[in-house]
Length: 625
Image 1 (cartoon, rainbow, N blue to C red):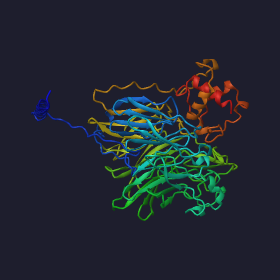
Image 2: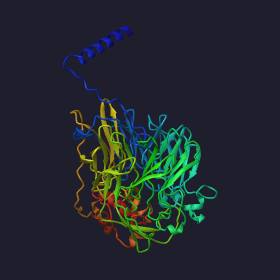
Image 3: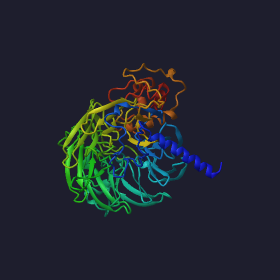
Image 4: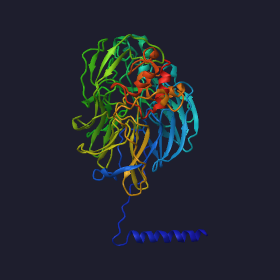
């Protein structure tokens, strides 16, 4: 066919469509234009707000499942997905996936093979720039991946896992640089933030969050030697002020966690928001929440930038201490301090007999911070309501091991909150109390609905103006990662991660699964929902019930995914008891039964996500500690 014939046919088709569109009695409802979710918090200012309004307070109850994709058999799943031009990008501990953003079809999967043993098997997502994805790994590597093909473009070792260093945070990208910080404080690292060249992985600058020598803040470590393993790790993503070229970094707790007398002084820059020049890494300013923290109440979530009604630049900060802070970015003065969960602080540092504190080390604002609702003009934040008794112990630093110098026992009851506050005064406008912690990302929209989820496995939608719960849907797994929304082909979707087993998984747990929702339109092809995990204890497994011979190697892998967050990667203990010398205390059948039928202090993982074979494999592995 000639070009002229093609042109005439195209024009005829267009005219026919126009005559239909403007025929009497015919109305065409245009769907939203395609949108992306380009970074962990939607935009680099951390606001998580979406301009989409196809899903609104009137129709949100019609949301239905479009598809789901099981990403792993078990383990942590705390990633914040990105959606770029029709593809969702997400991670688990070692894998990176590209998935069709309308039907959950896997386009590619990059499987990273660790070169050293990972410290903490967790990853919270990727950054995107110039056709590349960037992420860290549990064994302290940094990867660049081709977003179109999934091919690894470069790989650099940027930390030492033998010292307890790993990279769970989502990097941020800025003018050819890739900015990321090291975790984790609770292993006694000396925290730092680095910038790398996006093309080569070459380090461009670094800033130590625990200063030494002549660095600013070194004098706040009065025992200078304690700064060598002072903590100050970075757990999650960061925030950028594109106008000023500043990066806002949340810095974690000092180490050891529960013996602040071992490190006298304010311990900068632990428990602080540190503001750096994004180009050079030079310190601009900082705001510390808790000097000489002895309760493990670090800053774990990205700050959120906004402007108040007077046009002044502000930053909102959600902390594990249970408060929402607002700080003026020009004057650097604190404007308000609003409690957003139960707060009961002890009058002394932890002792060997214990002190009671609210929130405990697993409470407050965790790794997803405050969002800004432009429609309702309010800040919204999710929190964990969970108290604990903290006990101190002897200080014994061992590289690569948990370095808390104590232990804690959390309350048997817990809960969560979603709180909306006035952005100028900090006054609470509304609160919703959840039966289980609220850790997932908060996403307000122009449709007047705010999305999030809880650790009991419920996807939640609220009327933004009032806090009225409009939708509560069981997903079969704890929500601990990002909740995002975007439009493709005239339809608004909501995507989120479900199924997370970690130190906070005393709710639903579940298998790591990507979930995709949209308004019901008769065209969906949804997979059936998984069977809910039984609340009743399962019948004990015998060794013979396992499908194959015990596999200690697989047990090590499963232990790392499901157990190490509480018991330590080598069984040295942490939030849970030490498992070293277990064989002298529990024989093999008793160990199997202990995993299957845990006490109230442990999450129930059997029969899902761990089956009989997995239980036997883990028991075989830990019997060797």
